[in-house]
Length: 284
Image (tube, rainbow, N blue to C red):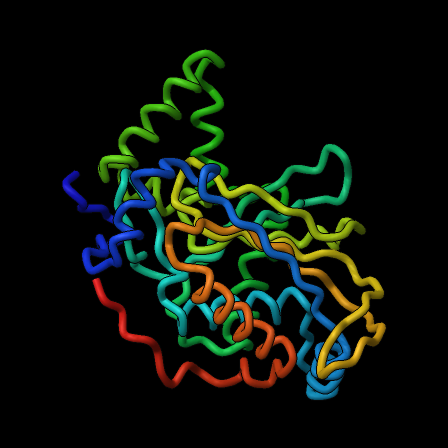
C-alpha cells in the first residue's frame, strides 16, 4: 500500500504526462500499442553457422531472447510497470515464455519465468534457458506456476473468479505475497512467444491485466519479405517480430530508440557475447 510493493520501487520523478497517464488508462488493455518489424536472418544464419563450427548450438530464439535481456538491461525504462495509478521500476529483469511439452492438440503447456540481471552474455542466457526448458519438458515435472494453477483449479469454478479478483485486489495495493509473484509468469518484464515453431507468422498478443507485464513479443516463421534500407528495396528471408506494449511506461521516442538497439543486436549478434559496460541511470 501507499506505493510500496515487493517486486518494484515507485518511480516518483516523472514528467507530468506520465503521472497522469496511469490514472487515465487504468488497465493494460487501455494502453496497448502495437509494432511489427521484419528481421532479415542472413546475419543470424551466418552467426549460428559460425558458432556451430565452434561446437555451440544456437537458435533464433536464443539470439532474440538474449537481445531482449540486453536491451532491457541497457534501457531501464522498459523494465517499468503501471499499477494502481503509479509507475514502478522492477526489481530485476524477468522473461516469461510458454513451452508445449508435446506438439499435439492435447499436449500440456507450461509457463516459465527466468530472472536475469542484464549483465549476462548470450551463452549464459542460452545455458540458463536451455536448462529450464529441458527440465520442464518432462511430463512428470511441475514448476511453481504449475503447482499454483493446480491448487486454484481444485476450487469450484464459481469461486475461481473470486480468488482471482481477490489476488488482483492484493496486487493492486502491493499486498500480493512475494511467493505468488515469483510463481506468476504474468509478473514479468517481457513475455516472448515463438509461434514460428507452430508454423505460423507472428501475432499481436495482448498484454495481461492480471500481473505487471508491460511488453509482449511474438516471433513468427521464416518467410520472404521486402526490406527498405539505404534507399534500396530488396527481398530477403526474414522473421517477423510483433510487439504489444504498455505506453504508460515510456514515450514513443524511448520505445523507438530501444527497437533500433534491438535491431542492431540482431544484425550483429556477436555483440551479445559482451556484457553490458554502461547502463542508463535509473531515476526513481
